[in-house]
Image (tube, rainbow, N blue to C red; front, top):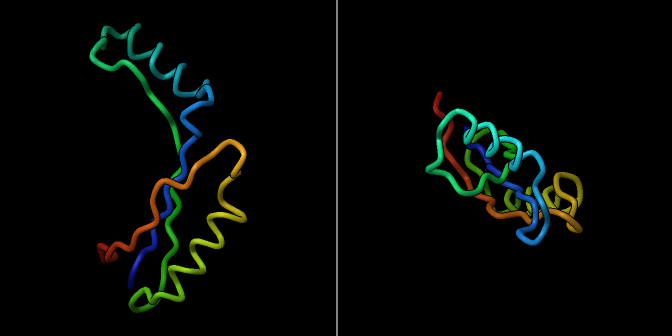
Length: 85
């Protein structure tokens, strides 16, 4: 079994309020090593057998059409991973 992983992040030029909240919590806890936090989404599409080029193309289509909002988000990675099982 293969897993197609899609990672989506807010566009760099946009504010990330959730990331800012996490960064504030880090600083309140005394963790000042981190200067920015951005929160994104990870999707895992499980495929029986090996992931083919057709699977990858469908995953890209799904990522662009359903899993991300192109106005405010970028698809930063689409990759195939082996299932840990």
